[in-house]
Image (tube, rainbow, N blue to C red; front, side, top):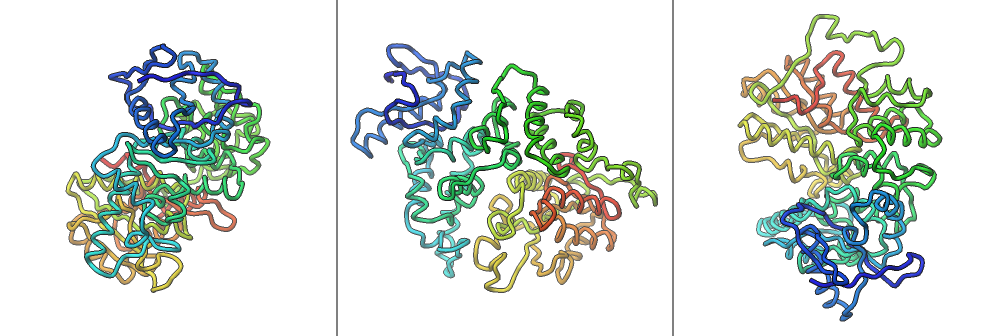
Length: 517
């Protein structure tokens, strides 16, 4: 494969496109030729280049295109050059004619899935919020088959990358390409708005692209960090540097991109820069926690803060309180009830209201990606152990604006769909025991421990936990598998912290999902 290689000043260059892709596995390496020089590139990049030119040529009839690709256009062995180029990423992607989002090689379903994104609404997409389920069984079967194809498309590694946040959001136009099949973002949006299954799962990313281009909105670094801290990247530093092109200019003005500095130095630099824009103690708690997690810092490495932030660190995660709370004992400790543990061999998993309403509806929760992932991991762990599982779903009257019956808002997340062997409880009140068969289902398992996960922490999870404790169940809640939304006067992270602290005081044990063996 041969290419030309030309150098331009970014302020005086021809129209060009940028390529957004996963580097992927580096072996076996592939070789391309540019200006008679051999370049070793990742197999996925070579595959992308093999498909990009034929596709663009077939669409435009043009035989020459300028394409910016990081593996070729940046000397990857020169840390200083890499750092300089990272500072230019916003301008590079914003100034391009369009970006090609390369999802990877095609499989037996990807071509059909991409075609669905620009074809009929019909069975699987409808105007307004949510997906309408067709009343006829045959059409419902077709709907689920199509939904599975779209779900497979958004399971590709591309969507988990850290760098795609700016690569996907910044360009004026976007082409999604998988093998030989492509779909333009604008065509997909005109066909379906944000209502097809693919857009639903990609909602945080797609929403921010829409907000930037349609409404001119810029994003606070603190908000971006919160949704990006778990994304995949080779170096933790990139969870900071990859957001520079999206964040408000004043948020991190003066931050130098330097891959050679110690991690704690980058942490300290970001904290000091944000001290001028983040004012409340609660916001600091959230920022320092998210920043430390993004940089993979251990607790002992997190105490590198300006003196004005010392107090915020004692408040982090709710593991220690402030002032009198530091020495306070829980009610359970006072009466001699020890913390509990859970395993798949001695507990029942109860997933509460893990429905699309909390991902895309009016009640959209924060940290939806991480809590969904934690729930999916727990579900697979219990399934592998053949342990009892209960799905609790909330039902509202016809036409209700939330959990709207007959739409995708009322359905459980795709990755949590119940199997025939798993119990499903339909509730109409915050408490999962109210007016349901949950008590009888749990009693039949012969187990006294219940692991509660789901949404929302301060309403249905909390109410169910209290009911379960009153009925004699040993309640365990994995805090990373519980979500909530912002409410007036309280942000979601604080709401979850307080709700779970109340449960830990008198009704149950709070753990991390990884502690369940």
